[in-house]
Image 1 (tube, helix red, strand yellow):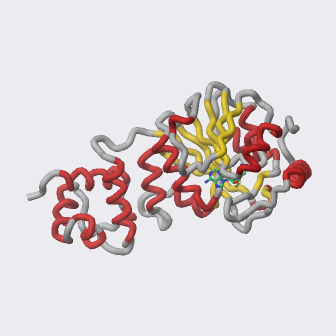
Image 2 (cartoon, rainbow, N blue to C red):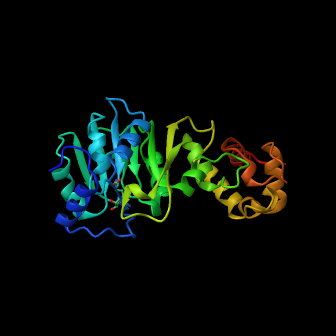
Image 3 (cartoon, helix red, strand yellow):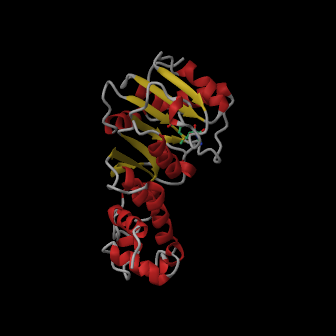
Length: 279
Ligand code: SAM
């Protein structure tokens, strides 16, 4: 049983006792630095009446920090051994452990409804997990996630940046995101060979009159051929380059522009223009 934050010795001891050999496949790099845990919890901007959703609690390092900060914590862990052991490490009555794949969880399984996503995410599925939880859980008002530094840079990038792409625009559909700093490999066990980055986000209203699936289809098409002009890149999606040009003009977007220059609002305008018959 642990009632304070876990340091390197406790993490090793816990893993040995549970027979846990961390796997790359599940992105298992466990935090063993109480200062980093305190930093994540502080950067998340949690309120005492928040309900936190943690994806991938692992051995419970961050969970222990979260239970002291909010009124309820839901922890979703795919690994059955880790999920079963979590209530022994974190004995708080306001913790619910869900042994499940975060990519497949439905919003209605959580009671009380989560208001903040706070997680050191499994890096191989980090972007789909964030996007699917924002879609699935309208009660989420924001969050703070740790991801691979390169992915963090992409998530917070704006139009015109070299790393602006599908993850940036799709996250922008749901939320305003900003960097909350970098985290070095040494605070994890096993030590990963990449830096990590913190991304803080706050939900916002999506562009008016837009349907997410339709806008996401335009985004996917535009970035599938990112070096091409939108006239060419959207030809397949629109049913021909001429039709793509008509739609783009109707949306007030230059057919010669590239997807990497457009805001999420402009992608929404293109999707809306495609629904109106263009002469
Ligand atoms: N939060 C812990 C910490 O900071 O020490 C562990 C973080 S570790 C980077 C990622 C965790 O996510 C692992 O415990 C792994 O088993 C879990 N995981 C991997 N894929 C998952 C999925 N699809 N759904 C839920 N948990 C997953």
